[in-house]
Image (cartoon, rainbow, N blue to C red; front, top):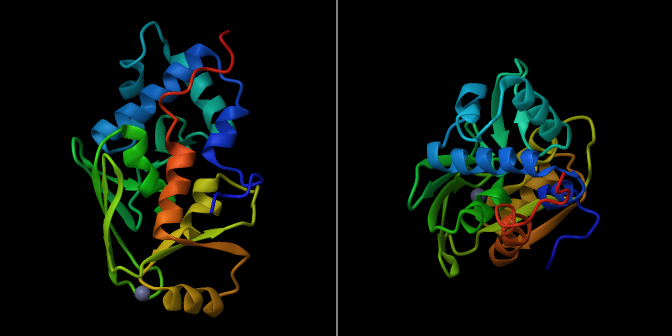
Length: 223
Ligand SMILES: [Zn+2]
């Protein structure tokens, strides 16, 4: 089941961001560096990654990327705290990359899409958002691998909250559950907005669709 076209994903925000080649270079450098270091990045980290970039240009570009909700720029304006799918702050979803570090993902679908984006296998360790039971998911070069428990599912909220970055509004509600029963119990116990129940296969396909081309697409604006 693909996500409805109306959903504001990182892929749709990027498609509408109208980035120049230079801005696109910075965006990709941030994602690649996050996948290598597993931690948030300072201005000093990023400036060494893109040739011919000064601090003023970099700050302006990072502000634009944050305005388009492609990264989360911290309050001091000195640090990329998160860059979808990566979180510089701890979350429930830790992705152990085969050729890299263990890095936190902003949500369950981001965790599933991250290995596809990076083109490497990974082992995801998360937990049921209702009962806290551990949930583990393997992603191989071929796609979704084994996962435990076998009844694990995902929930994806459909409501849009435009008050703040998606990382803060929607991501905390995109979670794994150990079973459909626990997902339903979680949903009923709280005043939750409408959402899309997903099997693990559907959630992986959503992750692949959203993140699969984030590092391979071409810039929309050659300027
Ligand atoms: Zn559970």
